[in-house]
Length: 242
Ligand SMILES: Nc1ncnc2c1ncn2[C@@H]1O[C@H](COP(=O)(O)OP(=O)(O)OP(=O)(O)O)[C@@H](O)[C@H]1O
Ligand SMILES: [Mg+2]
View 1 (cartoon, rainbow, N blue to C red):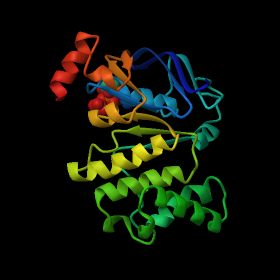
View 2 (view 1 turned 120 degrees about the vertical axis):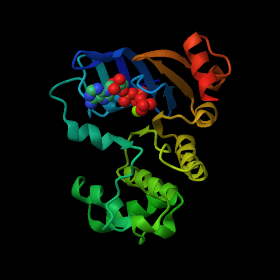
View 3 (view 1 turned 60 degrees about the vertical axis):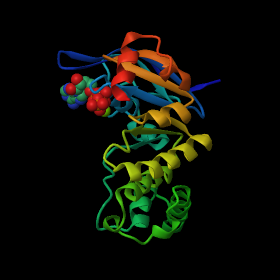
View 4 (view 1 turned 180 degrees about the vertical axis):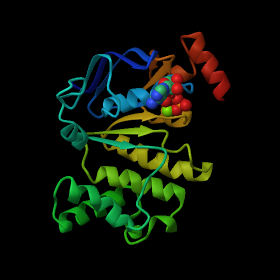
């Protein structure tokens, strides 16, 4: 087995405040990992470090063979391999769904429009929105817009995908359709690191769950760990969350 995402004793501070206090984690190819934990435990920061949206003070991060901790990292190459989806979809309102998805393949990868359009069609089919290619974002529900954002990421054909609370801004009835798309991706073998509050998704879809607490990986386990916490901190977290 070869880890495609590996964090080794990662320390990250903002000013005087250390928010990652020695995080280590290895994600194998094809694994879907759910990252859970209280607000402020460092989940988003850890995810952002993987894509070099944040730099770290010490430790090592290797992603798809890219030494992310290295100041000389080719950030552009790293980001070709790593897709990231946030809570806010940030689609361009004046572009159609298809144009939104084609933008990065054309401008970043320099693909011909026909190629980019084909990739967009494929990606839209994967998120169940093939018929929305010519729609504008405002004509779609929040759940559909988030699925377009996922398709936009998929069209770049990343090796790994990072998700940060992608359903948090959605009404409960729209959350399910986005989670199903992510479940399909996981089943299709995509390597995924998913920060989520959706305990059902963590339990049923994730190969492993990582519970973060106060800047540390506190517990790691499979779906059964939520029903059988080994630490008082995870027990308290689960009690509050249910
Ligand atoms: N750019 C920043 N500057 C200063 N402090 C920051 C910055 N980003 C995050 N922090 C701090 O780092 C800590 C961890 O934040 P982070 O966003 O990683 O938590 P989280 O686990 O994702 O929380 P949530 O569930 O609320 O999203 C928090 O105390 C936060 O205030
Ligand atoms: Mg967060």
